[in-house]
Image 1: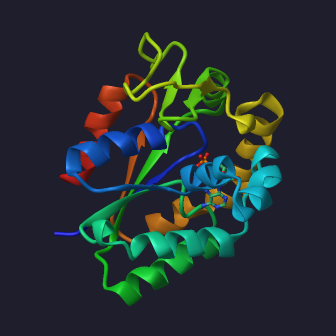
Image 2: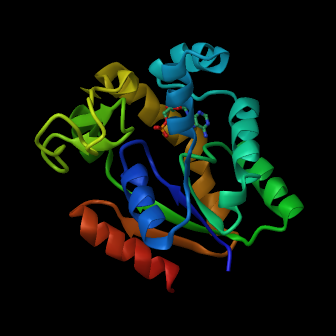
Length: 217
Ligand code: AMP
């Protein structure tokens, strides 16, 4: 059965971490628009150049751009058994476009899991977050430290960096953007059926257990 899961939450709520664990456990791919945009920047593509300043300012890339990225990705053969959406949709028009894409493709309904984390905990998390530009893995200096040694995945030289949008000014803007443009999705999906909410504070493994129990509910 096709399983389509959407993790909804503020930046730093742990969507990426939980999406990665879910992808491993369920054997379905994680679709992260943030990751796709960061890869475009690293490649130096036209798209990457266009979105860099917007991302670093903590604002949202335009709906058309991210919807087109998601549409292409959802057509791939390895996305036909399901997908874990991480960071998309982030606005009501994106959610409506996703509904239309799902209807056209005959995909099974989304299960929505909201991960709830207070703003002060988010600030603490983002200030300690590190991102590997090689493996694309995310760590936290105390909560989820990178392994010792030269590489996080044993594939050569890794470079851990602070994401440019994790700097304090950008974080405040991202929190504001979340409140204004993304949090209305809570009401949008709550009214639609398979909606669950988990407490996103505490141990990563405990939050993962809570996420898994939503899926079997
Ligand atoms: P994330 O890694 O999900 O925190 O995304 C990093 C940044 O990429 C965001 O702050 C936005 O600038 C951009 N971005 C990612 N996903 C979206 C989306 N669905 N809509 C608009 N912008 C996005």
